[in-house]
Length: 423
Image (cartoon, rainbow, N blue to C red):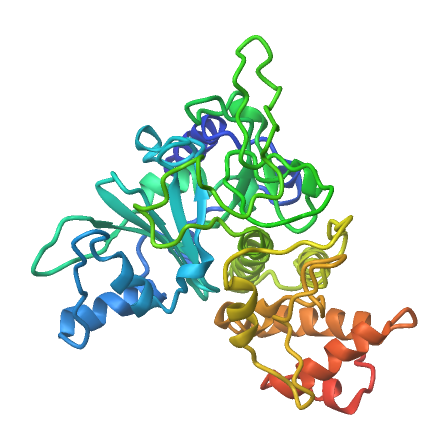
């Protein structure tokens, strides 16, 4: 069977990609990505990159080519991505791994819907764009100047590492923490830590450069394990609380000189919530397509509970001391709002004991959340509302409720009347 062969290839390749082994493999088993309700390989995508290509083809947009960085600055501007989101990863955990090292890291830039990968000596730029129904769609763009730049959709090449248990077996995003050797190769490829909001901070950022301050926290960033006789021993001398990468890596080939700690934590949160939304949408659409919505009720309850809990930052790793980035990311992300009548936003940072001041994910505003089938979206709304108005509701949760009521269109009526919905 074709799907069985695909599944075998995906699982075998995932082991090589370092992050196959993950507890989510039990709760989120493989589902066919070419199911008639999904048609991931063949259905035309509707994401920011696909829409940009349409504008380029029609002549509405022309990318500018920079002598140093090629199309990168123009692309970030067209996709609405800030340079201050830059993160530098030096582990060889990309298909362009041979061109990545601690001296030549890969740069990542992102917003809510698109992530862009840039390797200074690479032949391609990489793009991961969120389609509201399909999940993450992958593209590359040649670095060389051409009269008609064109994105190439990469399905088979990318899902070998981006449709695995760590992405909940849907095309998704993931952030990993590895123990890198001196050249950036993971010492233990099958033991990478999958990082999200729940991951203890001292286990994060292996294989990444990290600029910012975190007090007494000892994280894994900025370090390698130099001794093959002690392959799990990172040399952490001088790796903590770095406000500059000077002396470690030449940042002149990059758009910024930072690899911002707060941007890293924000992306780590965003990866899992994106994958949970996609997984919930896929399974619900399949149940509807097969006429099995009634049998799906218990599973729907589980999936919506997982998403609601994560959006509320359940089990979020706590900060032992205040943390701070060194780029303008901490300022520019909150500026994207929206803000309620009192000027509050779900994008406001806390950075004292937790990431955000009002812990409900800003991804509630994303088109992917709105595109969830109505039966699934309503259950998520109900669970969020019950948590925000329950007996253990705190002042922060009441503030979140007020922010959402002021800023989120098309809420269920009970959010505004404050009446409990029927179960």
